[in-house]
Image (cartoon, rainbow, N blue to C red; front, side):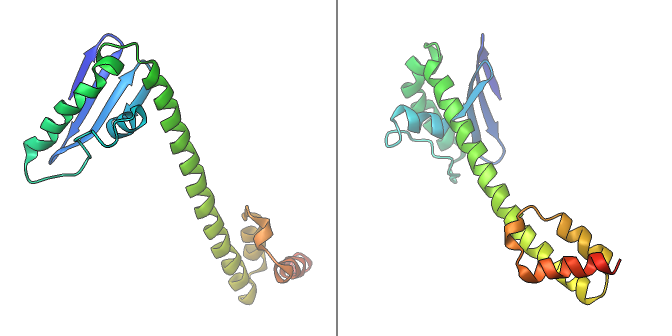
Length: 155
């Protein structure tokens, strides 16, 4: 469901209960809870994304939370929404980067082990291909360097 008034949009996603609640102004968007938390209403808001047996309770809670947003979103110029949206995006980007770095680090550890297995199987070409694909070269040790040298001499 979407409510639109000029450049302002309110999105409400619903499947089994109310879930996704987003406020948007121009290209700036922010989730309900993050918006209210950053506006200082963290302990006053009623909607918390938690599904309940009472399917109408979520809608009632969102409606009550609208009282905190009248001046900031519904009547205002959305200056705070723009700031908070940028902050939310920065947090998401930073979290995504950290998560990707963490996964890449773990994948490189697995690649090193796979390269060593390929060496034991005398598949020297595959060994070198795997070592070349490693991003975190600092994970490699002296053994890996010797294996690479050996493979280069025997291809």
